Image (tube, rainbow, N blue to C red):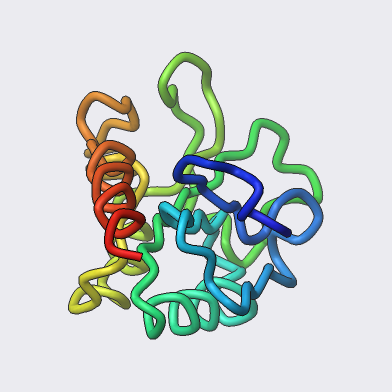
Length: 152
């Protein structure tokens, strides 16, 4: 994707739609207006998408925000071996099969010492809240990107 035709900071979802579990966009070079990359995250795309994409982008000092997927219809979506990591609950406005706090914590601990990795929302799962007002990532990364763009 060509992001340079935008004058302002932009966010790139690395693994949209059918790419969610298998592949991701690898930008080279990194555009100056890239605010952060968003990775659609679940418990079964860690090895194929999340870990390699986090490594690639954070080695280039690009912020990464992990967005945890929720599933309304689990038929053929959540692999049987991963069902324990999801529970049906209200998430924001509607009910979905959403990641448990324990599974979210396991994934976030993989990147505990990586200063470039954040979770969309403060805490995910039954112990958390996905409302934007508890997060602040977008504001933080927007203003940091504006500063980076001034320096370039």
